[in-house]
Length: 243
Image (cartoon, rainbow, N blue to C red; front, side, top):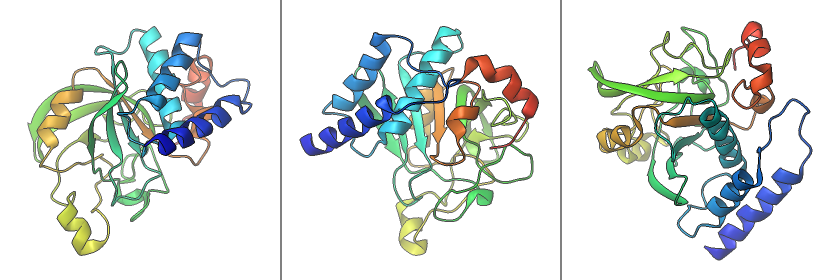
């Protein structure tokens, strides 16, 4: 574990010292930077979490918190679509205590790829996943059972999530048994679908106004995000370029 944490810290140092575009929003003060360092040094934090993904997740979380958009603070849900679907890639993180309180398998959309998610879209009918920051909202019982509404917060990247009915719901094709038979998870119509076995636990943990971030390292998401770059949010929204 110490070796894993050391590797994460080295990656973090490289990431934080790498020059960023002038319109990219960095951590606003020492306490926020220190929070990230503390999280990556926590012995309870899984070494499976990508430090760059976590850094962006925290950066957006603090921006949304300053704007008063997060109703339930202290929790970030990170979905890392750089990982193959056969691995756990949804992490519910307790920001204050530096712990992963839940991890889970999660499916990506049919339009995003097979084992690996490589394409993303904000467009209705694309059946693809959308990157970026979301606010969790209310729950309901629909055709897939207990489900959680997600509100996309990144203009032009995921702000059509509600129009597309992008929600967290359960699916039979998200399970270890499905992986054993097929080599990967099944795929959704764009929703981050999870296993029925931990569906209620995850939804109840993150519902009603927490921050959720879907990450992928490609397509230069960070420079186009209205959440990560608040001053460029209006311009990004007018461009309307899908992720």
